[in-house]
Image (cartoon, rainbow, N blue to C red; front, side):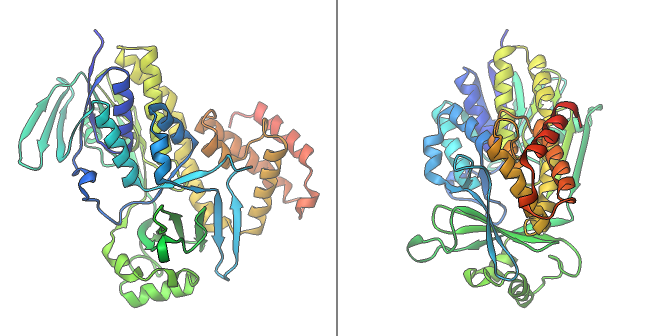
Length: 452
């Protein structure tokens, strides 16, 4: 008998997308979310980093037929705009041409669109409902309505946990045994800030770039919003002489920004009030193994593999999880044990790869984007991509704009590219000395003969 009733715990981005996909496949879907309904206007400020929607995520949204609506609430971003401490500004395009771009979007705005669309597709959504306990033997969920204290006992056919990095479902199955789980925190956290719009909702900086102020041990970034504002994020050490712990007064915050971000502080009239009102966010990587329990339950998205945000792929990766489940559901319809095994087999190597890529990219963004040798290698990488687009794709483009290339393969090929270009530029000093054909030959040889 094919299970038709599916309960999703967590009505965030991946849960809402998956609910729509499953409903379109004919399943009865209900979602339980511990937070209030975002559409009531109760959006907690200061905890979000603007999302970079790219081709992997776009592919999933196109699958449910919602991209026309999403395009109304995005700002295209075509590259990095680097603000050096001496005031110089440089532009680094993301891809080889205008087809390779990201879409800056508010997490809350996207979630609201998906919730609306889920309800239009007959998904039942229950807010303020907290998952308190999961009993594997009976596949029982204990859900508490936080509004009135009512407790519900549910016995779904299938449970899918998309309830984020603090997943209640994951916590319930950790103690079952033979379930591996790790969480690793960075020594850095983040603080959300804002550059308000100018007159008539005008943008006070170039709206089509990810603005980065790299400062070695820390950095500031800014992404545009449709209302002319920019959501800024300060990535900063938790402890030390220059850290969140050391910024104890408005004067110290102003002193830091005047010294390290002098070209932006005049655009941030609410800097100190936002700094002390908004919480300091954590940055962590979560890995688990396996993601499923028998044929009863599977974890997807941050619940199974949270990553740091420095490749802009957390949401895009979670959406790929959902697409993988739908793909294998069609192949093994009704055999949930096999479906879950195939999803895990398909996605685990790739989510491990994007987790490492994201950590690597943090070091690149805060340390390397203004380094001359780094810029030479990136220019050479883009030259190879432009000259041989069917053979050599830049690492960033593989990860971000080529959903047909799994993350694990992008990681492998990206390492090869980096190593070969690094070696080449220890032997030459200028881009004019760079031999495209010789580099191509070496790279393709390693692509075809290396497994690392």
